[in-house]
Image 1 (cartoon, rainbow, N blue to C red):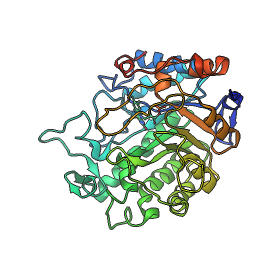
Image 2 (cartoon, protein in one colour):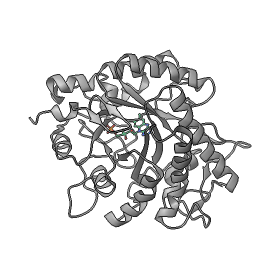
Image 3 (cartoon, rainbow, N blue to C red):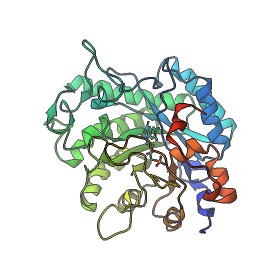
Image 4 (cartoon, helix red, strand yellow):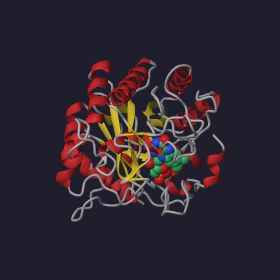
Length: 370
Ligand SMILES: Cc1cc2nc3c(=O)[nH]c(=O)nc-3n(C[C@H](O)[C@H](O)[C@H](O)COP(=O)(O)O)c2cc1C
């Protein structure tokens, strides 16, 4: 068995210091009926901090803007919800952890998720009226709506800093609003927010630039992105390292501190001719630290093939390949999702006894927040 020591080495950058390399992946739990994180949510995150996670990224949480929601019982990131989040932050800090909220706009997934949009309610907001390429059945955002969304994200970033979070993550992955701006299949705008790869990144780059003005140079901004979309697992933003560099450079220039590179299986290489995964390529091309994610310590990914349902179960699997890539410095941090639902003390267990001490994850575990 490969030593797990590398996972427990501190991570140190000018803006962010973590006690180890273990990150809790953002996971929506739909357990906030009034959109306010209650004491059960405080306990849930406290347990993961006590269990040794270095950085918790919260479930997706909505900034304040029209048509932002797509699912039921998701926490907001404004108003009364901020008091609940402040209690979460306090509990995680008391337990020795660090935490970032994930700011999330569902975009065109509104109406495809479990929040059905009825008559009179606003359709999902998208760059060009599409949730999937070629099908115009959503609302195409006007200039002022684009600006409203940018402003809402900036307010969210500022609120995160104000209530004591250690960083913030922007959800730019999986086919939601930010990713719909990135993707040429759903962004055919002809204004400043559309066009080539670099231009399609300008909506997010502007959120980052404006956030930087609001919170200064020191507050860490993490951007999560993915090649795959839940609308199309085979979709890709970049087909080559050159294209990926063209996509990432403006985002780095805008001020992203850390990229969270979402794959369903972390061990898969991104481009032919190299073993590097998406986090590996992102770090190599930008020099910016990266987080990898996807089936860490589990043998099945969270969205298997179409028709198999979401968030499926998985048995324990080796993390040797992860440890080797971390040793080589291909990426910096490792985000664990479902295995942390099954094992709140994932980090402590792995440090003491390795992955064989972990409990497998079962989908039924999502029914309760424990
Ligand atoms: C129940 C559940 C909810 C999720 N919600 C989110 C979310 O709110 N935001 C996000 O970016 N990813 C979300 N994901 C994806 C995870 O962050 C992660 O990328 C994925 O589960 C792969 O990691 P794993 O194989 O370790 O579970 C969710 C996954 C699960 C299982």
